[in-house]
Image (cartoon, rainbow, N blue to C red; front, side, top):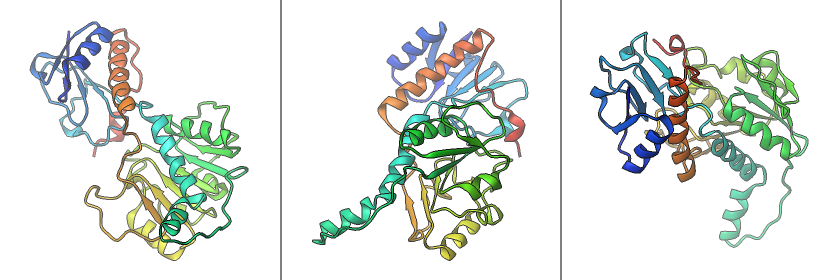
Length: 292
């Protein structure tokens, strides 16, 4: 059995992957490989048996070209720590008025103002996967009360309470963190009905733009200027429609980008290929949740 990496990587990465998997690993040679390790897309071939993504999400794949007998594994958890760090970078920057103070002092205005403390605030995590668990750990270190809502509860000492519904979670959160995968079930899940339950001050999206209904969110922000939307994703990115709402902070989908996370994600993906060969793959994807 052979594996190929469908991406332009160096021989060092392929060599390390071969060392991890015990297979011959090539680069961009899908016709002769049963396993494809991919970033953006796979190449349908008669020999293909298993696809391992380097990305944590799989919603960008063409599921219409995916045969039913092919095993698909995501790389869930590979970028969780840097993404959670990015979420709190935005939360802290806004809560402590960092952008405001920096701009004012640059313009010659030396003015003090009161800021909030995260200590004792309630962080609601919608989607308690890798990003959610990393965020919960950071939040507890800051003295926050952590709530979570997830369809599959994995006991986490950093979560104080699991909500019985998304509505309960949203209604109890001071800061709401969106960390759901984009599937047929979560598409547009954060809509005007769910937003109506929110009584907090910040909504943070580190997932995918389309789990939030665009028109509902934009209308909500316009009607509630005191509530802020902090997000690393935006609809139709990179073709973002400007101007964005004044009560938004947008970064260009960079939460998981770092040299360390990129290399680590490749090797983590290769490790899961080895687990597949051993008959115990992790992060198996339920294709039915993504097919149109």
